[in-house]
Amino acid sequence: MSSGDIIVRPSMSDDMDAITDIYSVCVRTGFGTFEIEPPDVMEMTARRNNVLQQQLPYLVATRNEKVVGYAYAALYRTRPAYENTVENSVYVREDAQGSGVGKVLLTDLIEHCRRAEKKQIVAVIGDSENRGSIGLHRSLGFRLVGILEAVGYKHGRWVDTVIMQKNLADD
Image 1 (cartoon, helix red, strand yellow):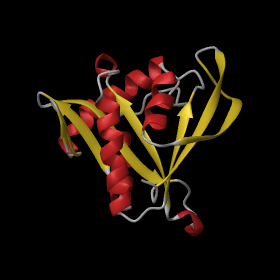
Image 2 (cartoon, helix red, strand yellow):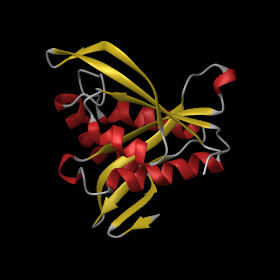
Image 3 (cartoon, helix red, strand yellow):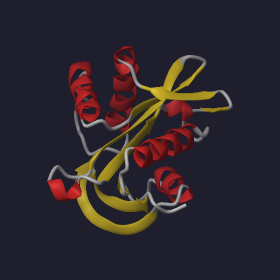
Image 4 (cartoon, helix red, strand yellow):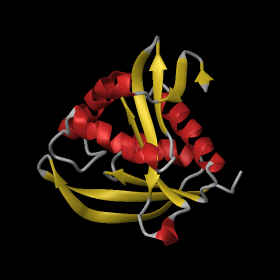
């Protein structure tokens, strides 16, 4: 998929350094993930391989051939009854946030999940103050289904988790 100067494509192993760098900044400075220590490129590669083994999408967004964001869908839970529900993750490089990268990535990810015949997609968003991610998901038809209050402690404060959901049969 392409939108203006943003191109979304399946990730490749050569993208893993850039993906790891983007995620590391999120871990060190933000609340979008509750990890405390950034994983190394080997761990990030193993995580990507796990997603791909499940035949789920792991995408990157590029601008001028440079990775500016990534998104993937993983099984929401591993028990068989959940096999038609996925959880999405979207991460955008700090200097590209607010420029439409997240929306292009998530739009493409949703379409991949529909083609994979998934029925529900869930967003588990770190920090109820994460207006960017909440707004992004809302703009693409996700609805708020709950807030888990003060379930994580990071960067010296208690942090909520926002749960949003989209029925992939809608639209």
